[in-house]
Image (cartoon, rainbow, N blue to C red; front, side, top):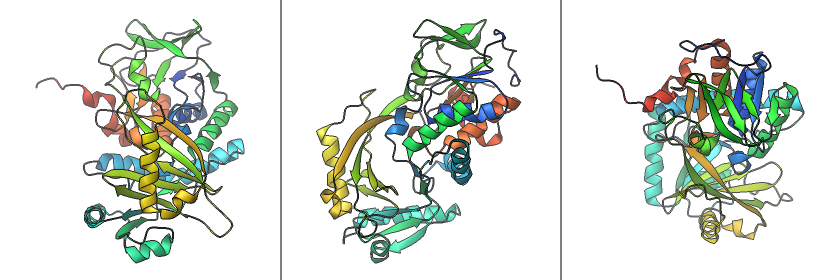
Length: 393
């Protein structure tokens, strides 16, 4: 049904109810959940399941990712984290594919006195918000993770921060969409079609026109660059590059690391995410370089240098892959969820560093809006119109 304030779509009878532009994990999640609501859905993407999820470490860490002033984003992230176990189980039931979801917890550690003081402040902030995080001494940190450097000064253990494998998640979502009857158009969206002041679908790079009742823009860091998108409908969604390394851990003598480990090293955030299959993901740099995805010697060096300072034995592990991806950052680094100023166009983009974490809740919120015409209250802080200047009273 049309959302409140929207006009009825004018589209051919064979057109889908919903067309999702972008087949990353956000777009696929929205498509899957929307199809489950009984709407007909199509997705446009040359490589469904590709994008940032192929590089992402997959930490589900709303508590240890928390920064001051991000309480609304915390609520959204906590709501999504609470849904993840059921979401992953449902995907596995629907497809037979494992998403790599693990309830491992996260350990954020300090390497010097300044880092320790900062983590202490963060722990106090967690306490004021009623979040479950436990302060540990350096010795207690090393008891949990014996491979940590002897100089670790303390840390925070957050048992409810978990992980998922972004690549496996993407593959499962592609399969789930196919099983749910979502049409996957493996082509570029070359232009947004706007007819009578309303989003009407897209023209593909092949020249084919795909019309739909409503169009969901979930194209990640390229969302605001879609030709045909009127000025002012979306703020700039900028690409933020992150370089990531994948190593192989030994498994013969117990786990090298057993949970997510985070730290700030020389002012740069670093994380290590161990997989059950022996893969260890190290990331990630933060680089404002446009749409460049070059893996650089400097990026690899910095990640290995900082990881070695945190876990000295890491330089003995085989390096099996390097990669770089683009996080879609909005002006306030929070997602854009819900209807835009253009009738018929709905946003699901700008998730920045939380795309994997926020996939379940974004899918649920957007599917509810598309099916019922009401945006759930949980999304109220993230509507695209928050960037629109308010008219003077």
